[in-house]
Structure formats: structure tokens, C-alpha cells
Length: 133
Image: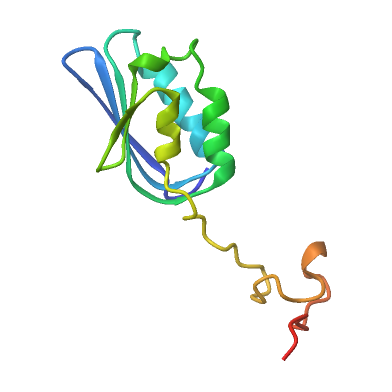
């Protein structure tokens, strides 16, 4: 899980579950979100997921959430996604996750994947870039 991913959950009106997500959303964050829903949602009311405070969203996390969010976890018509501007019900709300906000992952050597050895873990990297001048 991303070190800065957080879920703040609360029940309102005795049944609806409200979840506020913040930080970076990756694959393990998707698992944690589903686990939180399964533990905290009692089958009554709605599940409201606020995503406006997510910073970086990794496509794998969104894809995994789409696959994990099934009718057995919570009926789709009871899920609301809120991004600060819109509220979307059901599985279509997954499209509200910020697209294109994934950070460029820096390589261990700092060459930003431009050295000749990037595919093999930078074992021989000395900033030999493959860029032409």
C-alpha cells in the first residue's frame, strides 16, 4: 500500500457509510478500500466514496477496484463516488478517479529510465543515456 494512502470512514444516519480517501491510490489501496467496505458496510443505506483528495492514482489500482467492486460486496446502485464536482452512482463512478495523475516513477539511479540498463535494475548504470544530444 502507498505509505500516504488513508481511508477515513464514518457512518451517517445509522446506516450509510461515508469514506474519504486521500493520498496515492494503488493496487493495495484498492484492496484496503474493498476490505473496509466489507467490514463496515452492513447492507443498509449507501456507500459514499469521496475521491477528491487523492493525489496520484495508478491505473492498476483503479482497474483492480473495478474488478473487486462486485454485487456481493455492495449493490452497485448503493455506491456513490464524489469527486468534489460530480456525484456518480454505481460502477460508472470509477471513471471519476483522476486520470493521468500517475507520477513518473524515478529509477533507483536517478536517470529517469533513460540509461541503457534500465530494464535490468540499473546494475551497470552510470547515467549512460540513450538520448541523442
